[in-house]
Length: 557
Picture 1 (cartoon, rainbow, N blue to C red):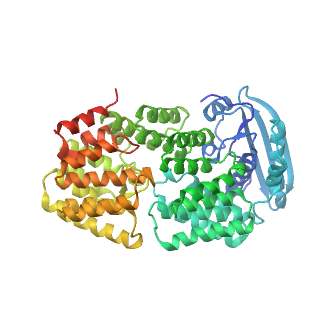
Picture 2: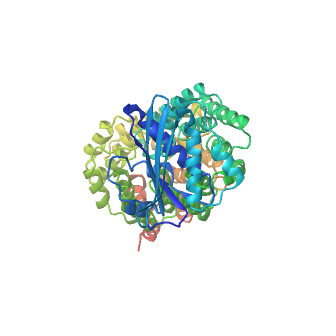
Picture 3: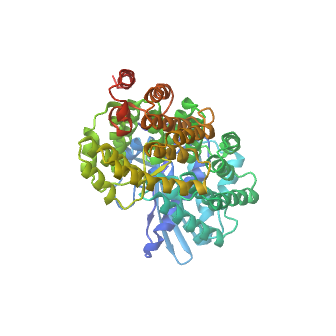
């Protein structure tokens, strides 16, 4: 990644020079608010929080290399020292292209002046970079986010779990803890708009990913959004939070985009804004717009797993696996050498080529890796390909999780679903039936909470097909399609349509299954070369000339 234009900047974590080690969060807060203030300036490109967080203080910093990795011309660093009610903040601006110091300032004030210092500092940087600052942007920079520094610290503790939830090993627990911190922040300062907005977003995610799919969770999200808008009707952040709520809780794409349009001028450097816009465009089958949105998010936050995973996933849905691999190559080259990035790169190679080698290497290299349960099903699948059904079952039993992500990032399959697949693959019909019945009970419980959840109904249909209830299964799968047609949501719609195809496979309706597969490969979906060629779900179709022709047409040339 090359250095960016002359009005681009990254604000690195500030060093805490205080004797009290707990003040490290205070130093993070100073850096966070300066970054937030600069991000409000539309004439600047400002790298988001997630991508700068890893450049910890205390380690040697190569400014040219950091500038290259983040794609910026300027870097800001500094230190914070707090003693009782006194503050000393040092800040330096460095030209990353030449590693020269171009500006520095020291602020000695009282702790009560913190937000004023951050505002002054941000405006000094705007001046140094010769960026345009509108009167409204200036007013927003000068506005205090909260009157309570303890509330601000609680808010800071919650933000990372929401802004980069895809890298949490336990997404549900991370989001629940974030909600708890934000609720405490709001109790301390009932007028803290940003805390309400982040609380709404955390509750949205808990509902959207079925981590707590209850009406009470929707009510919490709605109440937080409404309070934020009541406190300030023209808050861009509050309108963004409302867009997130409309998308994730109500699936109202049109109204969500209306709210994004209102929020857009006030959030020129917001990674979450572009991610949400990309999500909505993708589900509306506007893939070129979604690519643009996710690419912008990736440029603003190149180490944010939400940004790079969703960009790569958008290529995967279009079966453009080489481009998806290229995204991860860029991530790794920029220094984000984390196991989950290597796993997802290997998954792109696997799905595009049916070459299991890179995936097996990664799973062997990181035997304990488990992010949201997405690795265990792959370990089990690889073992089944080897005919090692005992190992396929063992890795499932060994996992403490009771549900796992599969092809996408928004649905969790019960463990018994995978145990049924292993049993079917090895010809143990009694064990398969028992596992499918257990899976059915779990899915039925989910439907009590969300009775019209199309994805759950589609998987229930597959389970009933496996139990020999052909007519019921086909009826359920069709009901899921009626609830979630591809014209309404191409993303979930295609997954639900794939569910009907798999019902046909397990019900002996192979010609009808192949007809649907032919349709699915003409649209964005998770149907791909490796899944059709290697996954046990599609085994009954293998050897059919038309099916093999479809499979071979998907191979990367």
